Amino acid sequence: MYLPSDYDDAGRLKVPMLFWAVLVLQARTWVLFVIAGASREQGSTLLALFYPDRDAFWPGLCVGLPAALAFLLSGRRHQWPRLWKAWRGVLVATQLWLILWQALLWWQGEAVTGMTLALLIADLYALWWLLNSPRLRACFHGETL
Image (cartoon, rainbow, N blue to C red; front, side):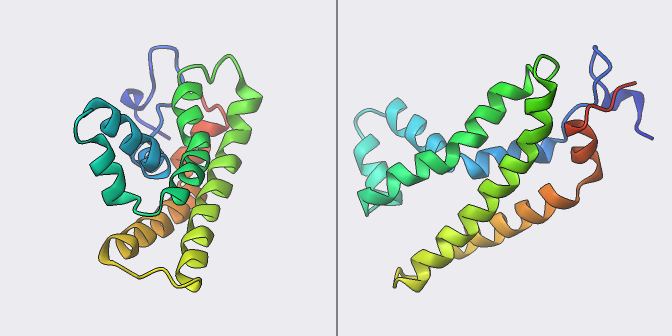
């Protein structure tokens, strides 16, 4: 069903490139944290720009943890096949939580900005893709050559 180039050297189906983009989207607070740490002088300014309410930063790190763990787990999916198979559900639940969290923030009176609207649209697309991508489903269910 897939081309030989879609498989790695061990014969496992490679995860699609969009999977990595979804993980970065889910772990966006972690990415920002690393960038802020790398730019020591402007790190706090950068964090204040994206997280004016510092109380939202820590939940963002917590929500991004499953995606950060998926980065690590993806290289060892052959060692923990049951955990890897279940992790797709964890990522779907995390994506759903991100969408509900943003809706809750808006409901509580947070301003709807272009950035938050763009992130919501990206989150909705990521959820749809996580649920409907046949190749991603095959990757999580251990399809091999």
